[in-house]
Image (tube, rainbow, N blue to C red):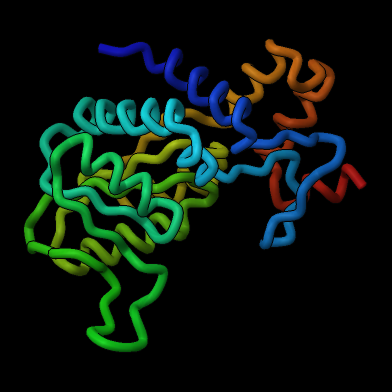
Length: 216
């Protein structure tokens, strides 16, 4: 068995080191939703770093076996979950499929690409969980196609209560290699952020939709 807390901290270290995650508590980013955020995460950057990419691939594969047991196929969520899913499928020697954000408007009109076999047990791969909405749309598409969704695995989660509620309502188990709490703990311990910013960063995770209104 592996020590999960060590993995959480190592992945946090990697994501900060390669700038896949940037922390700016005093100069917040603006998300597409309009939310102000002290963090920006782009896990696609991991693909450009072989050591990081390999570690994430191996730990996702190992964790899937630990958490979900035997599965038949790996499914990626378009678009950022596709390359991560391919790497995991290769590591496990399993078939790979992926789920589009919406069905094609031409040709076969497919929503799911790849060979779909009804009854197969599938694990969904995502790069990042915020509210979980797009991830769970993919889960629902796979279920509608007749697959049995064992659960979902991702690299990182912000740990929003809304995500917990959404996954619970959808009756979908999930895990992530790292999370926001591990990230800010690592960042504070290694002086990447000032310890005085910890309270501000913690409040963002609890109240993300109105956090920026109090910072400007």
